[in-house]
Image (cartoon, rainbow, N blue to C red; front, side):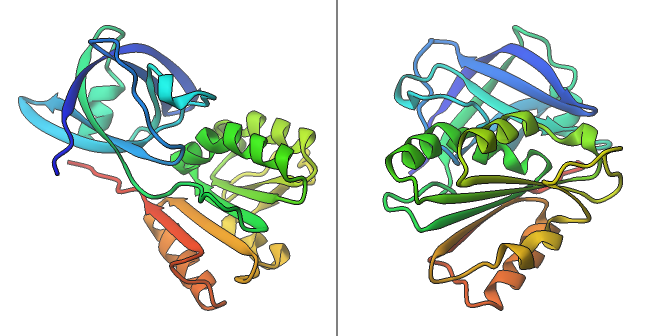
Length: 249
């Protein structure tokens, strides 16, 4: 079944980090844009006279998604990328089309004992949408644990990091791990690490009998991490993955 395409209008754009924007679209007919936290939409736009399509995870932090009226996503500039050329020059009022939602990178009805949420760059967007739901679940079940691991090159690229840190301060069962592959902060905090996301895996002591792992972002990270967890007896039932494709055409 083909998902219908809806005309949308850019309402807001803001800079999250150097070369990273957050764009907010609303439907022209002002109808709700409902989705489940972790899902993505396809966005159609015109580039050099041709119709193009790219997929982006919803990044909005919304409590009532059934009545949600916007599609918010984060995009990082790619040199010579068609999507970058369009969205980084888009202004409020510009139009596009979306279809969706799609994807199965969502929370199950029954929680495991712990979630391991791993993302690089804008790959943490799905986890940001999950924060309201995770907060409700942790309030209902104080034994539920969440480890969110985010990988970026430098501290300036740590989008939504303040929100994840705030969640960790409110809930002892929620831990945030920031990994920097190129540049560490001048005075690193306890939750900040040098290297790629893989540097914290062993210390997290993943257990396929109790944990559910989510991987989202750079394709190389997703493939390498998927192999790492698969070697430790994780399988499709407790290892979910979403790879971002970086297009330059």
